[in-house]
Image (cartoon, rainbow, N blue to C red; front, side):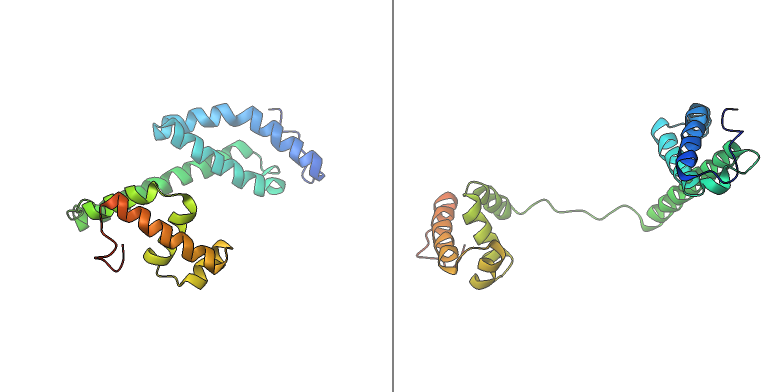
Length: 177
């Protein structure tokens, strides 16, 4: 094994070099093991990355073990089993709670409003959304956008007129959009 001759207390650069050599020498075997164990290449990669990260964090100790590869393999297997348990527990909890309730579709008025807002210039849209949908006063909208209050008021007025036209609403009949 190319990493078996690693000393028990190498300097930092030697430690990194020895870990790199260990990684190159073991990654394919460990990936093949985990791929066969999990049945999923992406899951095997995720688990293996986590196991190597843990080995790297403890490399000065792991490198002194008789079989560092066995240590990483054991850690990886435990990570995989832990993930299976969490997934199983989520599934059991989901089954207990039953299927989700009926989710209503989007309100047609909201869809129309969002479509109309998307057609406004971004400055007007931002002012309208912050003021009318987030209930911020003009002064706060001005602070958040770094714009003078007078400019915010003008953007609100222009934006309201544009929205009224896009939504087919008469501004004289309504107090807000």
